[in-house]
Image (cartoon, rainbow, N blue to C red; front, side):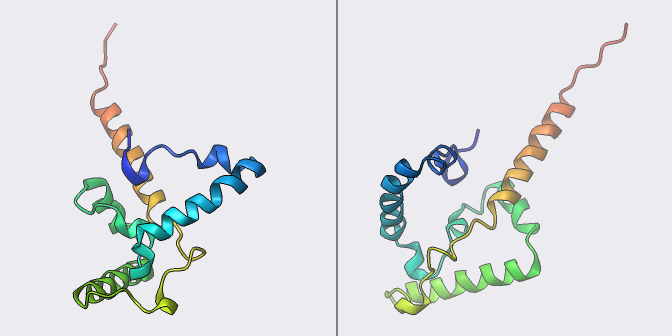
Length: 127
């Protein structure tokens, strides 16, 4: 079972309900802005812990363009952190740009690991 940013989500149940979505969306936007990662130019998936083996394997599956963009965001945020100031407002990550580019790769790696475990632990009986 996954925990943290890749864990269970209520989004599939909230999005179809217009009234619930209208009520929850402003709170979700406020929370994402309060987290502060967009002020440094990060996307949500940039915050995943890279020391996890499944995330490391997922990072290897990124296209060269995605790898470059991720490295650029990390270096730019590092420089802003050294200067003790967030990026200028026009360089912040906008909500529309904050897409989940790594999640599908991580979930694929987890599925492959689960399948590998299942096949590695299978018991074969002869009759």
